[in-house]
Each structure stands twice: as structure tokens, then as C-alpha cells.
Length: 434
Ligand code: HEC
Ligand code: HEC
Ligand code: HEC
Ligand code: HEC
Ligand code: HEC
Ligand code: HEC
Image (cartoon, rainbow, N blue to C red):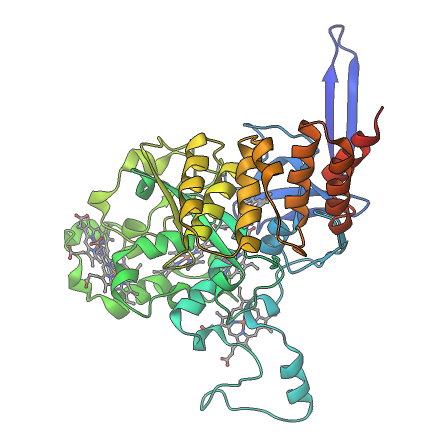
């Protein structure tokens, strides 16, 4: 499979021609198939996507707003949700040396080595009687850890890694906030709209979730079996475990007209605000009369009424520093508005962490505000190792203030950590430009 990009000149001749080979396809194929180009191990998303529900090709999600053509990096962040853990070339963002295909057992069951060794030694546990502690069975985890497992991938938002953590570090049974925190922006009308990978967020908004300590994804889903071949009765039986048939106040004849399919009315299908041409299931189980039907049927961007702030969805009590990081990440990845920076500054002023933790966030904020003097005035504690991003940002401050030699020193620090980060390399190269 190939993608051809071409342009015609005024006289109809082809004046631009670029042909790229597709190496991987992602997506279950029920909503979309997106395409990946592999250039010497560097992965890029192809600009076209096949939308299976409408059977049509269109620009890939996000490319209508910002057509980065063949330049959209696929970093470990995307890949570790859409696939099993790859092997990443150290020091790169989007270069991989080994790419498995598909999401493997260990993503939900944890490392299997011990389990296999025990079985080979003939140690078999009767799981009907007791747990087999050599491997994780998600069913046996407490609800919040079950949610953390599924929302490692089914809660897309702005993910902020904890210091020193990577997207490879989460394992089933851990708390997601031990590795990363996920933030979403909230508007006054947020309950009416959702993005595609937000099942965990939506389910949490349901009265069912809030009022029953056991409801989780696997109350309704058996992830070994696709929704394609799961009968509606599996979901409806789940409702009926907690609700009596007569709990529903809708007229019996209307319920009968829908074969009393609870989910058809209480978990309707809808568009999403980030992926065009798809219909997905709203996981906020709710009252039909309280839904804004016009909002739920479109795939266009939400109205975005007043902005309320960002919410941390992985930690009940995020620290001020967590929130400051969240606002900065929101600014970088989603909404580049000064409001985000003001909020980050507010939370930063309230944080009481050690300079080693505070300073990188401070540098980040000053960098976004282009406060170069501010950055240069910072005294880093002796022996503090600057992470690559902080080093790069200090380098930029030096460069902007005309301290080219110091800039080179800081770019070097960034390149040491990420020798294959093309932007860092470019900065370093430009420094040598006459
Ligand atoms: C490693 C990431 C990852 C984890 C962990 C994960 N999922 Fe998924 N899941 C995905 C991706 C990606 C898709 C979408 C496939 C596509 O359409 O591209 C998906 C699809 C699904 C689907 C719909 C597809 C189908 O054919 O049925 C269900 C249901 C689902 N996941 C449930 C779960 C549940 C429940 C858990 C927790 C026990 C879970 N997933 C954990 C990544 C993950
Ligand atoms: C937090 C995990 C996560 C991250 C990060 C993530 N995705 Fe997804 N994405 C998902 C899940 C899960 C679905 C499928 C949800 C469903 O089937 O309802 C999805 C859906 C999609 C879809 C459309 C539906 C389909 O068929 O799979 C595309 C395209 C997509 N993602 C591309 C990307 C790209 C490109 C990136 C990186 C820029 C990315 N995603 C980052 C989890 C993630
Ligand atoms: C997307 C997450 C996910 C993936 C991937 C996954 N599983 Fe599971 N698995 C689960 C969940 C959730 C349960 C509990 C299901 C239940 O009890 O209804 C489970 C249960 C099991 C059980 C039953 C355990 C018991 O004691 O009853 C076995 C065996 C199992 N999985 C093996 C596998 C194997 C082998 C693979 C890879 C081929 C795999 N699983 C991939 C989520 C997953
Ligand atoms: C694990 C138990 C559980 C499951 C499963 C469950 N619910 Fe609920 N649900 C509750 C609880 C508890 C409430 C809170 C109100 C109450 O006590 O009835 C609730 C509330 C509701 C409400 C009122 C919502 C509101 O906003 O006021 C509706 C409608 C509803 N559930 C429908 C469903 C449907 C449809 C399903 C299946 C798709 C389902 N529930 C599955 C426990 C559950
Ligand atoms: C109360 C039952 C229920 C719970 C709980 C539930 N789901 Fe679903 N889910 C459904 C139904 C119903 C569908 C639609 C199935 C169909 O299209 O046939 C669905 C579909 C999906 C799909 C396919 C894409 C889509 O949106 O249509 C994914 C992915 C998914 N669920 C993930 C999850 C995850 C992750 C969780 C936990 C955060 C979860 N679900 C919890 C009932 C549930
Ligand atoms: C034809 C659509 C439809 C079907 C099918 C349906 N419901 Fe309802 N249900 C409604 C409507 C409409 C209401 C009234 C609440 C509202 O929106 O104002 C309601 C109300 C409820 C309530 C809340 C009652 C209260 O306390 O106010 C529950 C719980 C509920 N339904 C559960 C179910 C379950 C479980 C099933 C499947 C066995 C089901 N419903 C099937 C449309 C439906």
C-alpha cells in the first residue's frame, strides 16, 4: 500500500510527486484504519485515514486543522497505546528498532515469566479456589486498579509523565499516577461532548459508577472478545444485575419498540470531537431526557462554552506542582492560550517542592513566556542534572540573549540525552551556522 501526494501546475503537468510506502496499519477496523510510514525506523503517521463506518478516505484526524503531511512523528506515547510495547532506539522520540504487531497479553496481565516458569515446573493453581499470584488477573484487582489498567489506554487526554518515568513503565496492578497523570480541559458544556478514547472519563461521570463501588469496564466487557461479536444481552444483563426491569420509568411500549435494549437509550452512539466520521458509544450512562441530542449527533468541534479549568483524572488530590505541570502540558499540546500560563504560574507559586523539582517547571513556564532574562537569572543547585528539555530551554534563552557559547553547552546536554532528537540536533547544527 502506498500514499501518493501530488500537485498539478497551471498547465496540468505534475509539478510535485511524493510516493510513500505504508508499513503498518492501526485500528481495529471498526472505526478507522490509520497508516504508518517507517523511514529507517523513524515512524510517521500518513496523512490519510480510511473511515470504515462511512467507507471513505479522508485526511487523518487532526490533519484538516494542521496538515503536517508526512512529518507527524509517532512517538512512544501513541505507539504504547495503540500497540504492544515496541523497542525504542535510545535517545530518539520516534525511532524504533523492534515493532511488535497488536496488543499483547502482558499489557493487561503483566509480565508472564514467573507464571510460565511455575507452570513448566508443574505448579498449577486451581483458580476456582484461589488466586494464582504468579500473574495478574484483572478481575481480581480492586476497582480503582482495574480502571487504571484500562485507562492506561482508554483515557486519552494530556498525559504528563512523572519525573524519570516513561510510557513503558506502567504495569497492570499499578496505580497509573505512579507513572503519569492525565488531564482534560473542562468547559461548562463538557458533559455533552467527548473524544474517542474517553470511555473511562465518561463512565466515571455516570451515577451508576459514582453510586456502586464495583462497576468497572469488565462488568460489561470481556476484552478477549470483540464488541463486534458480543450480543447486546451481555450489556443489558449487566444493567439488570443492579437495576430491576421495572426501575425504568419509560413507557413499556416505547421500550418494547427497542426490544428493551437498555443501552440503545441509555448509552447512545454519537460522534466524537476529535475523530471525524465515526460513531462511538457514550459511556456516560444517563437519562435520555437530559441529553442535548443535537450535540450528541455531530462530529464537529464542541461549542466550547466557558472554560472552567483542567481536571486531573488520575489522582484525587493533585499537588499544586502537578497542576502547574498539567497547565503547561495543556498549553503545549492542546490550547496555546495565555490563560494556561497564568494558571500554571498561580499553581507554581503555591508549590513547596525542592528546587530540583520546581526549577524545570519554572524554566518551562518562563520559556513559554519568552522570559529569557528570567531563565538566565536562575541559579541551579550544585550538581543538579538538567533534563534534556530544561537544558534545551536554557540553551534557547542563551541564544536569544546572544550567549552563543553557553547555548552550545546547553544544546549539548540536550543532545547527550537525546542523540537522535532531530529538533535538538538542528538547534545544535544551527549554532554552528556562520
Ligand atoms: C495497551 C493499551 C490498551 C489497554 C491496556 C486496553 N486497551 Fe482496549 N483497546 C485499545 C485500543 C488501541 C483499542 C482500539 C482498537 C482500534 O480500534 O484501534 C482498544 C479497543 C477496545 C475495545 C473495542 C474493540 C473491540 O473490538 O471490542 C474494547 C471493548 C476494549 N478495548 C476494552 C478494554 C478493557 C475493558 C480494558 C481493560 C481491561 C482495555 N481495553 C485495556 C488499547 C488498550
Ligand atoms: C492514552 C492512549 C492513547 C494515545 C496516547 C493515543 N491514542 Fe489513539 N486511540 C486510543 C484508543 C483506546 C482508541 C480507540 C477508542 C475506541 O475504539 O473507542 C484510539 C483511537 C484512535 C484513532 C481512531 C480510531 C481507531 O480506529 O483506532 C486514531 C486514528 C488514533 N487513535 C490515532 C492516534 C495517534 C496518531 C496518536 C498519537 C499522536 C494517538 N492516537 C494517541 C488510545 C490512544
Ligand atoms: C485488553 C486486556 C487483556 C488482554 C490484552 C488479554 N487479557 Fe486475558 N483477561 C483480561 C481480563 C479483563 C480478564 C478477566 C476477565 C473476566 O474475568 O471476565 C482476563 C482473563 C484471562 C484469563 C482467565 C484467568 C482466570 O483465572 O480465570 C486467562 C487465562 C487470560 N486472560 C489469558 C490471556 C492471554 C493468554 C492473553 C493474550 C493472548 C490475554 N489474556 C490478553 C484482559 C486481557
Ligand atoms: C454495578 C451496578 C450498576 C450497573 C451494572 C448499572 N447501574 Fe445504573 N445505576 C446504579 C446505581 C447505584 C445508580 C444510582 C441511582 C440508583 O440507586 O438507582 C444508577 C443510576 C442509573 C440511572 C439514573 C442516572 C441518572 O443520571 O440519574 C440510569 C438511567 C441507569 N443507572 C441505567 C443503567 C443502565 C442502562 C445500565 C446498563 C447499561 C446500568 N445502569 C448499569 C448501578 C448500576
Ligand atoms: C455498562 C456497560 C459498559 C461498561 C461498564 C463499559 N462499556 Fe464499553 N461498551 C458498552 C457498550 C454497550 C458498547 C457498544 C457495543 C456495540 O457497539 O455493540 C461499548 C463499546 C465500547 C468500545 C468500542 C467503541 C465504542 O465506543 O463503541 C470500547 C473501546 C469500550 N466500550 C471500552 C470500554 C472501557 C475502556 C470501559 C471502562 C472504562 C467500558 N467500555 C465500560 C458497554 C459498557
Ligand atoms: C426506549 C428507550 C429506553 C429503553 C429501551 C430503556 N430505557 Fe430506561 N429510561 C428511558 C427514559 C426515557 C427514562 C426516563 C428518564 C428520563 O430520561 O427522564 C428512563 C429511566 C430509567 C432509569 C431511571 C429511573 C429513575 O429513577 O428516574 C433507569 C434506572 C433505567 N431507565 C434503566 C433501564 C434499564 C435497566 C433498561 C433495560 C432493561 C432500560 N432502562 C431500557 C428510556 C429507556
